[in-house]
Length: 130
Image (cartoon, rainbow, N blue to C red):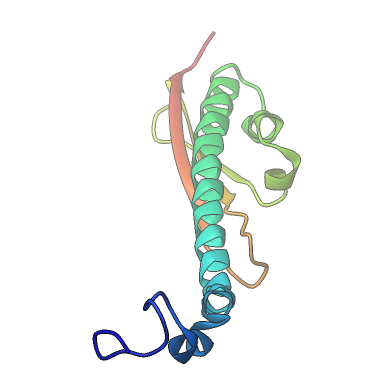
């Protein structure tokens, strides 16, 4: 017996090793749902950002089409990918006869089917072209 301890050199002998066996595996299994949830939240943030970006691009294209006398809804849907086209609402604003102003609402797709986040709105205006 050395230094009042038994069990050898103190590098983990038999006394405490049994309690820690498998602890890392249990912690990983407990942490997996949290990691998945964080991953889904991050992916949803990317989807919201892309929807915002695409809605503004579609609003600019719709305003351009309106300024040229074409259908702004067709122009907006032409910019958006197929997954976003179905729920798009395009409203021409008649505030000024000299400007082709358009407001666009695009529903936000979700990574979880039961989650509903609403829609992204974008507005653009362009001078009417003769």
